[in-house]
Image (cartoon, rainbow, N blue to C red; front, side, top):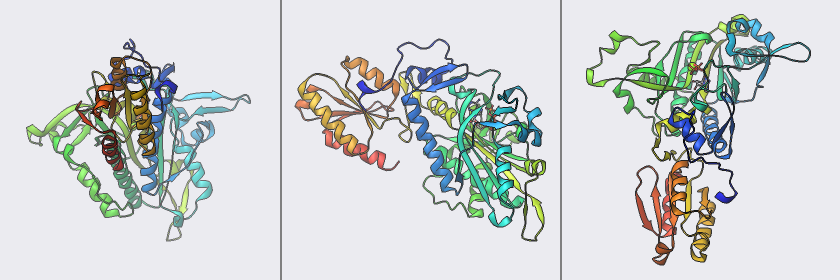
Length: 445
Ligand code: ATP
Ligand code: MG
């Protein structure tokens, strides 16, 4: 993409109403624009990152054996009356009446709708286990929408639902989700720690929240420092292997990690003092096992292997896809702007032409832009007639992990400058070598 043709309305000044770095930087980098309180338009660069996160979530869900689908944003109130949640949910639910006077709602979550789909189509344990999920806009009329996409009213969420014949197989689904979520966050370049949580209005016995550590997080968290050393890395995972998934679950849930809702001071104090950590965290996902809560209320049954009708065991699992962008930026930025992890960066490399209009630098940049595109590096070429300082400031603000700077002085010696956004380190080398190096970096992603 050429910057001269791209819609990237960056702001020089800090927007007054943005209190935290990610909100400020998303507005300044021209990623989002507020449409109404807690509701945002996603401008091209914000949309590009959102799609990248969505793709990673899809890939990891499909890898775990889950079925992608799409349910509507608007739902009929009738199903929610069946589960009893139409009255329980309170003012967070946006209720709408259609022209025929029928009660509708903008879905805050989808347990009822999916249970209805399930009970109409599945009757036998032979069709289980089954996990269905979608990635769709949700609406929750939050009392205090704030921090940009972090606590919006309309937000993009992956929500999945598992159906199993009994508790042991539903617990495997729980463990499988935990593992697939760990992988998802790791791929995004994030450390998200599963913490035992409180089940809230969804109800149920087992639940873990995934938290990204950040000073601006809304939750207070307490954890054993050792948990920070755990990585899935490139270990091979067989999502049908109950023992492997349970083993990983145990590995991650043995070190103490809880939010303030479930914090147990006495247990926490059993950890050696130097490992006792407390800080703030951002909730980027949650998994639940809630047994037969919805299947009992909505009569969703299957015939088991003993030929007996039993209520199906369920769990639900969510990832805050739009909130994740805020969380990634909170975890990775500096005073000059965003620092994207390579896996989610909107563009692989920025090309800065220091002397736009000069035949030599223009020619070299065009050639570089073509080669980088051919290599799949998805370059963003700053071809505007701007001062070098302004071009560098824009690149730092939008935070592409790599920048190639092309100027007349370097070209005389046959070199360009390759700069890493995170370390700030620059190296001079031929354009070919710079591209080769970047191709290697992105090959592993
Ligand atoms: P919170 O405690 O932050 O209000 P929640 O526990 O009510 O969130 P869940 O029902 O667990 O939310 O939804 C799954 C995920 O969706 C959350 O982990 C979070 O990442 C994201 N999410 C929830 N509410 C919002 C919101 N208002 N804006 C953006 N993302 C949200
Ligand atoms: Mg939650």
